[in-house]
Image (tube, rainbow, N blue to C red):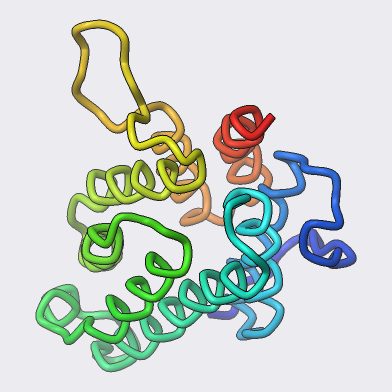
Length: 208
C-alpha cells in the first residue's frame, strides 16, 4: 500500500521501560499499522509489542513478543489473501469471502494463546477482516473480539459488567476501537490516535 503518513515514530523504548501512557500506546498502535503499510515488518512487531507490553501486564517479555508477532503475521497473511483475490488490481469482494483465511486465523490463534485471550478471538477477528474487505458488517465481530482482548488485558472476565438492565453490546472501549478503524480506513491518523486514547486509558486505570 503506497500511502503517505505523518512522521509519528518515536524512539522505541525497551519493553516496560516506559512510563505507562495511553497516548504513547495509541501512538504505537498507529505506528504499527503505518509500518505494516510501509512493509516494515520488524518495526511493526516492535510497535505492537510496545502496546502489548503495557496492556498485558500479566505477560512476560517472550509472551508479549509472541503475541505481537502473531498479530503481525496475521497482517502479512491477510495481504497474501488479498493479493490472491485481485482482478485488474482491485480486490474482488466475492473472492475475498470464498478465500482461504486459515493462515490468518492460525496467526490470531497464536496471539490469543500467548496473551491468554479467549480462543474465540481468532475466529471473530478473522471474520471481521473478511467482512471489512468484502463490504460487510465488520464492526460487530470486531467489537466482540476486542471485548475478549480487553478481558485478558484487564484480567476481568466480567467486562463490561453493566450494572443496569441494558446488557446488550460489548462495552464502550470496543466501540472506541471500531471508531479507530474507521479513521484508519480514511487515513486520519491523528483522529484514530485520539479515538484509541480512552481505550488504553481504561486499561491503564485498571492496572493501578
